[in-house]
Length: 342
Image (cartoon, rainbow, N blue to C red; front, side, top):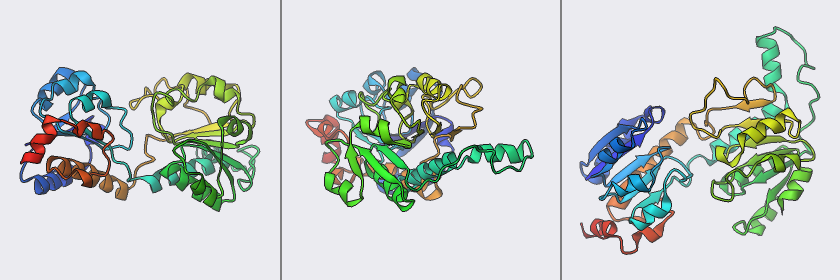
């Protein structure tokens, strides 16, 4: 039995011994290969050609790659999203795709609120004036307005969106959220959150935060047309997915004042060209390196979840897996039948 931990260099800088110990204990001494992906697709296919499971974060696993892994039964993702995997291809091939559905809700909600407070209170301007210009001036941040009574518009009212709403309510913000069929109205009502359409959010929100997952509908969702509709020139916060935003349109929206500022934990690329990024050097833009998920506790939880997904999948304990987003992969899958027959 072979497990491949496949990631980019940055994502491999974690305690891999912890993962190896979990996998070894749970699968009775499997072969565990750690592979740093550098863009060589042919080499990756060779490495995973005999793998039973893969643990991955951001490496794109497309149909061509998956076709070269005949023994593959499970892909465990060190992420909540799963857009890095061709799920249709995986399903056809009987490969379970198992993202970490719940591990960093508290952290992302805290990070979102930190962005709201930092932007609203003008922290970046104050810090620059004190540390760089050695100026002590409470007016340096311009016109700061009280957060209480402001309206927060949330797009993506799942676990993270609700955790943000709970914290924003404690600061006496008014909260509206984008209505979706998947959202139970009674949950929003109990939290004093009003579900509405995007037009009302664009019209009334002082702060807008994105927590939507990435799919065909939400890719490029925040474009110039929508930024132009934001009547109160809100602060825009994105802790969802970078590709939900048309980055050049965001730059234009900032330049033309359609939005007041932006707090971004994700960009269109996971390896952005920081030497040429047009969003840098702005007092009204705060960027963090996709760190919203991170705490010591969340990082360890994530490792446990992904390893346990592999262990449960290969031991046939499917019901114990934290999240399988393509259960159809189990139907008639030779790989699944093989795992059940051991």
